[in-house]
Amino acid sequence: MKYCLLVLLTCFIYTSGYSQSSNKTIDWGIKAGFNSGLCLIDEFSIDGQNIEHPENIFKVGITGSLFMRLNLNRLYIQTEGGYYFTRGGIDFEFTDRLGQNNMAELSWELNSVGIPVLLGYHLIKQPPYGFTIFAGPKISKIFSSKNTFEIDGNTYPLDYDFKPLNYSLVCGLGINISGLFFDFRYEFGLVNFIDKITYSSPSDKENPFGEIILKNRMNSMSFSMGYMF
View 1 (spheres, rainbow, N blue to C red):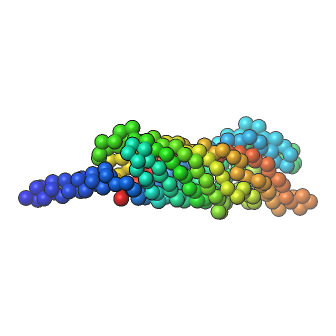
View 2 (view 1 turned 135 degrees about the horizontal axis):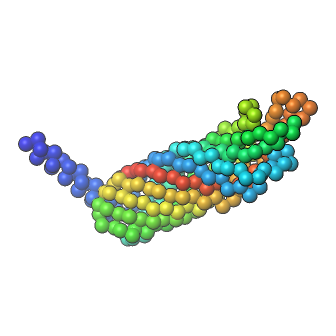
View 3 (view 1 turned 180 degrees about the vertical axis):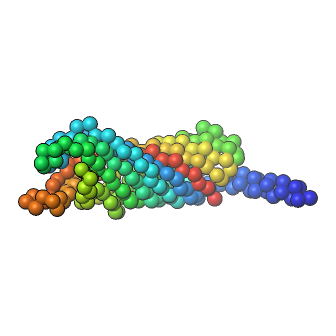
């Protein structure tokens, strides 16, 4: 008897999800996941010294968002409001003010909000299963950050001046089973989002402040899962 009740309950949940995801014009959903950033450097110098061959340090961040999807048969338009916590850094060799060569590290933790607008297409749309591809622009704003410059065992805080807005292009694919879905996407940074970086060195009292020029675009890869209501 218990086995029969369990089967009936499973069928009810299954068909409920099926009906919710197959005929609605507008879907609402929530998703959360992980991301990792890739820094594409166009120019990098410290106190006028050009830095050659910097290497990315990959770290895992988190992301979460609410979204609305307008279904147009096989096409759909999806807009999101999301929070993004992105971590990363770069390793490089740097000659300090005393003429010593050291391995140095520039690291950051960025908190931002973003709004992508995506156009998607259902390659497979046979409820409760679906497979989609999507692409579209995204606009975002960094509202807080924690940034450091580490060299020879000493860590200095960095003061970033960010541009007001950052623009990127998002593309990806999604798989859904009823209301549950998995989302993989790659984001291409389109503009340099940093105006200026300064750091302070308390050990150098004659010239305590230095300037870092870092012209870069930020790409990122993310994976998330969520549910459509």
